[in-house]
Amino acid sequence: MDMKRIFLIGYMGAGKTTIGKELAKHLSLSFIDLDAYIQSKYRKTIAEIFDNLGEKEFRKIEKKTLNEVSLIEDVVISTGGGAPCFFDNMEVMNNAGVTVYIEAEPEELASRLLASKTVRPLIAGKSKEELIPFISEHLKKRERYYNKAQIVYHTDRMISKDEVNFTVSGLEELLRNIIAK
Ligand code: S3P
Image (cartoon, rainbow, N blue to C red):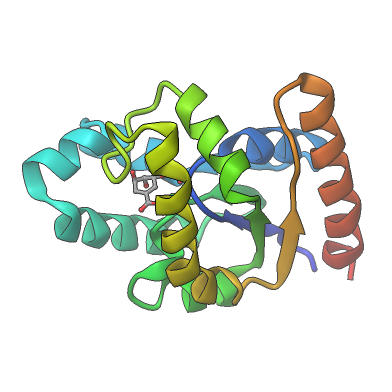
């Protein structure tokens, strides 16, 4: 494969952005975070877009932006947790490059989300006790989209730098075999 384009998908808090940034460095590719790209393009935070325009409009913006970044070459793109679940986005990504589902357990996702400063409108204000069952239910609905990814990569704890490095190195090895073909 001459041109390299890797999409990271998965639930909120899975570590797509953290992994994506490091992975891009390891593979000497550029890195795009779809939400960050939307925020700078529209000069609004994701929370503001949800508040001002509603989720439906956010999904349209997300789709349009995904189509745009899917043309960029030699890049790792991390996407928002809902992106694969709307329109034909999963097909767009599968046609444009290698898709990787960053999979994690609801308990792990919940603790990462509770520690995060990013405002995520879909889970705003939920306590840990509410979050775990919410994520379990939500994941069940989303998994059928996530599982269309070409690679499913399971992650465990990713708190320390060493744990992140371990995760990224494993994924890098897997991907090197695929993108070298
Ligand atoms: C969303 C995930 C968020 C962001 C928005 C909606 C979702 O991205 O796109 O808040 O529907 O799961 P992260 O997965 O980076 O948190």
